[in-house]
Image 1 (cartoon, helix red, strand yellow):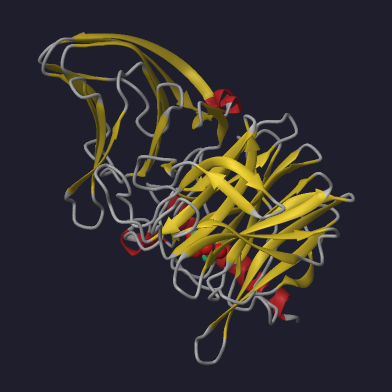
Image 2 (tube, protein in one colour):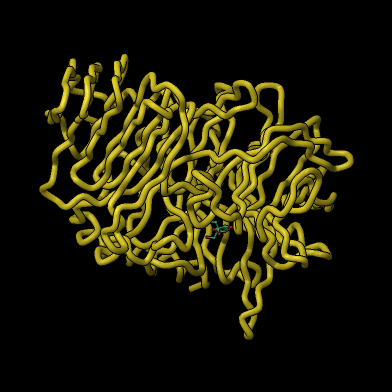
Length: 477
Ligand code: FRU
């Protein structure tokens, strides 16, 4: 048996062996993408090809920690119902033996091409990095083509996560990097044939252009044209918390600007965070066949208490966010849940809430619900409480929205805040152990895992002063 066959067999056996335990977990989600067993992190190779959406993911089948990653694979016709496909890539070759790390997909010449980082550690534990290509005729089984780009001078081997696109007949690849002076950067390569890549230089980063010190490493960059501008999404590591900003261990956000691929240089504005919650990292986008820009992200953050997730005793950890459609309005990214998710709605209920100095319990499915709140008339503020394990608090006086949750490390209450001005509407997606809150039609989003005690099912609205609002709820199929 080849190394690849051996690893595939071990993974398939592992899924079979643990399936029952995994599926019994009360925190298993109902309409989010999860690993069948083990650990999931970044979305990879997201593309719609020949009508089918493919979403690959960083997968470690053998444990609930990080290590030599596989590319797991889901496919879907509608972004809502997903099939688990056979494994796309295993870490079976000299150039990826310690992990087929994150990367992206493009279609060319009737084949699907995936670019990924081969992570290699030598006998002393020193890291090596190789940008690799694999191709597929059917979108399911991949033939590795090996290394297509190597580490240029001036960077450490923290150099990874290729995202590839085509512009004016040329191919470009952006990567996350670290300079030898330990500055996070986004770097650019170009190619005419997808196999030979030329290094062009770095386009943005810490201590570059107008940006001051901005992290020691940038991961998972994604460059896209949107609304007449270029948008660079990236995950900087090493930013210090600053007021409401940068509260998570690592950040995910974007710069809006203009990419000059000749120089190369990306002239851009300020960094904005994509999500205001606790669990959001390594987002990846694709333009689908209808021309929409769609984003998936990992609903987790590395090194942020991962080992304490209560799902770990049941041999799985992490999930993806829901897919979001991106648009750019006045240089701000607006994120809306894709409209296909409405297909999951059933059992619609309408509530007209009017209360003062009271709490009202919503008679909804606590496990899997979409809750749409509109026309709020708020005297002072209000609170939505989710199963005793998370709360959303709106304070009218300063227009601040706060998400609190009970930490699963030590049960202490932790919080994330965002200034939104006037609250007009909330679209909230509750799953067994996740919350996604879209504020004012996608102006802000809070994403978080939460782990209510099984049996604590109450979703409550409460206020000290006068409050009236409309709510519609749907049970998600
Ligand atoms: C981000 C990341 C990537 C890397 C992958 C490894 O979460 O660290 O930079 O390619 O995860 O799983």
